[in-house]
Length: 617
Image 1 (cartoon, rainbow, N blue to C red):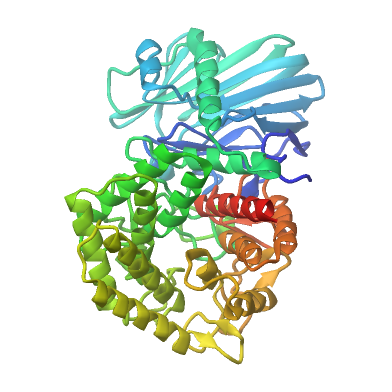
Image 2: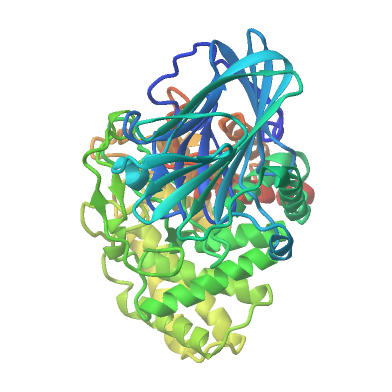
């Protein structure tokens, strides 16, 4: 497949059997959203994940975590069919064509996205999913089932028909409001219906969430206007994206994913909109990713600035300044979308888990870890913000001074590391590299007059960290920087030339890249590290590491090899251009929470680096 084309081109999937599997492959999903919540839509026409009112709220549809209890909103032909889907160009509006025996129907799925000024003229519901079904040719019989199961399947709601076109789905003080011109029946907390559409006929569904009454309810007569304004909203936003030539479509789709993962009221960018999609099917590494990791900050801001999205990059930086000031002087690895520091972890043991992958977790206990590299990441991110015209007030300067002092005081300590393993702390070489980066950037800010720190102390400590890394972190026999002193490779060390710790022409950079390719790579895919038996740990290959390898190869002068790897990585995306956290090299199956911000950030930065080095050549 040509690079960059699959994210908007329609792709056909074989869904010819009327009985769908209990669990679909993770990569079979599309996403729609409005900058506050996200829904996952399957190729079978079912919405199998939706948390309201925010990314990190309880799910009302969670079929991806329990096929029986989770709940779903399904629209599909009654018999055999084929599905062909795409995003409308330069938007997050999903269009799926179902070809059945008697004809073709088209389902358009989106969440309204309007400017604040437009919302005053065209009031929209607090949260809303719009599904528009139109018969394109022939005649097709459709089945509809709306089984909301709030609080991750714990509640079966009360479903009532209010009038000819309105239904309510109620639990406690909360409600979903459905407006439709289809006639539905109620069966134990579920709305069901079967109807036929002939060419030119259309049925609309608008499902809205309201946390309180009175609520702004959807109006069917406004949906043409709402859809047009939503399409214009996305096209206008996409128009600001910098061109990178042959990779334009792939980069833009990844940028649109990041925009969906951005919580509009605060500017925070979550790692993924899902929880507990497994790193290995049937395994226990099932984490809640509906939070914002500080580690992603520098790479995210770098990607946004390079694409031309300065407003988004600066909004994220301001969220970063606010959230880290709350826990100052210490940092936690992850924060909520509002910058809060506690994300207590619990398990939902009544849920089956994706294909039996248990436990299902809500919250993330990684917030208790000490991750030294995060301090360097935050200083690096805020330095990028400052270089791009951002301003530091007194509190921001105080925060940065505090972060630099913590690095100087604590850099010799063991930490939990970038991969957040729960096996205890160690002297992680990557963490020391990022501590060096943090002090190197602090020196830059001090020399520019932004910080008041003692340059001699900063420089002496930075150089001491560098000496420690050279003495303890490089294995001469292996010819590579290692995960901990003298032991094992770590794909995170591919960032060494990316963050400027060593120049790309240093022979230790090239030898580390070669060692990682030999021991951690499977074709274009790269594992994070090896297990104790020196074999892959059973999880999939990590996509951000695979994109880091592309960047590292380009920087050390192996551009053709980098481009070839990148093209193959683009072919690993699903038919809509979306990526999870990991991929199983043997089956090609996507693994982990979906879609994953870090994977799409890696794609963007790799594409921009390839474009930059290709232009130099």
